[in-house]
Image (cartoon, rainbow, N blue to C red; front, side, top):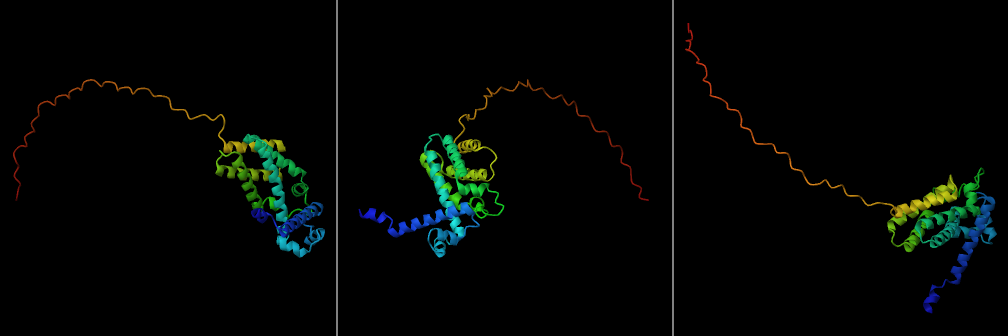
Amino acid sequence: MIASMEARPSYTQTAKAQMRESILDAAYDLVVARGWSAARMSDIAAAVGLSRQTLYNEFGNKDGLAAAVAMRETYRFLTGITSELDRHDELQTAVEAAALFTFTQVSDNPLLKAVLTETDEDGLHADLLPLITTRSEPLLLTSRAVLAEHMNRHWPALDPADVIAASEVAFRLVISHLVLPTDPPEVVAARLGRLVTRFLLPLPDARPELPLPDAGPELPLPDAGPELPLPAAGPELPLPAAGPETPIDGG
């Protein structure tokens, strides 16, 4: 009984969590309505009946608030993605369904749709796009950890290091498609399912390496025949005579 009471959040913690959610909701609505550049901290604070300083105390600055909004949306997506993975036992089908869920949800999400598809000629959402592209490391690390942990639990036979790598690759490819779509979501989702599956599992038609054909018994070399004797050298001939020695004339 005492342990359960200690684990229960206090009134202060609950109130702070509710205040944080209210701020994120207000920021979300203002960003969708006006664009991030036009959404001021004072307007967000006024929307929830708080002082601007309270927002700075909670999030540090406007960039911190933007990062918090992006992270909350990421967790919402991850909840749906893991649910899609749970609905399928076959890995390729599960990854394909999770990717298609992501693409569908993004198209229905007012904030992400505005960030990704608006022409942004006035720069209304220019500050938010880097949060899912060049400054997306927090989202990447969170998504990779959640997806890898879930896949390792659902498919324990997979190599954990490979699962982490596949989760990161999948995240990067999904973001790439969202920023620059080239094919229908169904096609991209199917490709992603095949890619992740072929990385994590061997191909079903992979064949074992075949042994080299038997070379057969070693054949003997042909008989060279009897060794023939060398021809006789014949009798040794005498050297010619040198003749008489001629005296040297001393005069």
